[in-house]
Image (cartoon, rainbow, N blue to C red):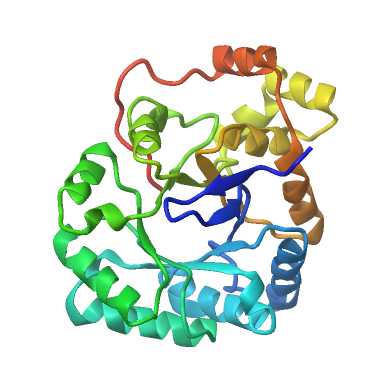
Length: 284
């Protein structure tokens, strides 16, 4: 079975599972392991690597830069700009600082991390300047809800936004009510962060659920693999789980070829249904 892929509006085809980097690069004792894990992920086909200037206040970008410096052309590299840096000269300065830490001359994708006080029109202008300058190949957003996306698309060149990165997993399905359908209609994929949910009560509820465990057992996968496979069951979602060990990254890579039956999906829907009406966007 072919691995699942996601197509961006410009025709770029990406693997449906990439690699998140939140909270890595902050513990020097784990640096070697984290770099080897990232590199193994690329080797296994998870070539999308997502980071941000916020992560470790730059230390994560530095680790990623060290990890991919000799395989840069194999990687689809993403970083994100703080909202307060997302306009005027600040967005150019932030981008250049990210490029320096990442030891590269361009980003494949640059995202607004979340909406702040800088007008979206100013952010679009800044992103377009960076594209023209060759510092980024394309741009997108993160943590924008449907109303924000509609506003963005009403701005000149706002329709050049190529992706929206939001929280999405089996226990947080609010985007299915309106955001996911709206983006599908505009051919804009979702990039799902925390596809396994954050560590805590909700994640335990998900992985310990009898239905989740039963379906996972039938498919000969772990409950965590089931959660990740569920997240990418259509062509509109690219998930970016973080892997802390090489074994973990191997498990993530294997998920791209997993398929559910309609009965499996119906059983999961019954236990963890999507909301019946619009709810606020979940944000971590």
